[in-house]
Length: 168
Figure 1 (tube, rainbow, N blue to C red):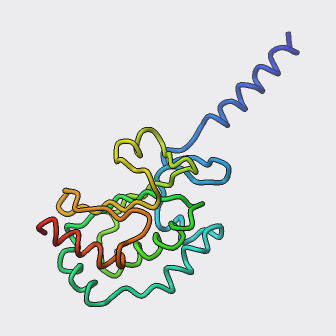
Figure 2 (cartoon, helix red, strand yellow; figure 1 turned 45 degrees about the vertical axis):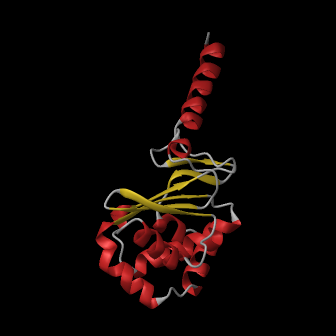
């Protein structure tokens, strides 16, 4: 009897450990998946690309001033992959623009996707995300536009154009 109970308990214990994942997300082959914060990226030794690109990017100051006037009404959803070269370049730049424009951090939601561009649940399908990075910019809760993979000009100019074209 003991010979049967011990393996069963051992199996159940391992099953619980491997099945559990936090509300924030999970890891898939060392790729974070689910909600992730800027601090988690910036403070991670595994993501030094974030700090390096953030430090080197210099957004246009006049465009940042324009965004500063509207910053309290701007929010964003970010879909990214830590494995993606476009994310390595564009995400730190996008975050720097948000920081310089003083966009409130509570208005920034970021989702890490796996290599199949899937997150937790149906979040990518619900937001029609096909490529990473995808930055969805909202103004007063309404979608003003998207930057997909890379901006047409610069991140800050594209944001300004989206907000102007959307009538904001």
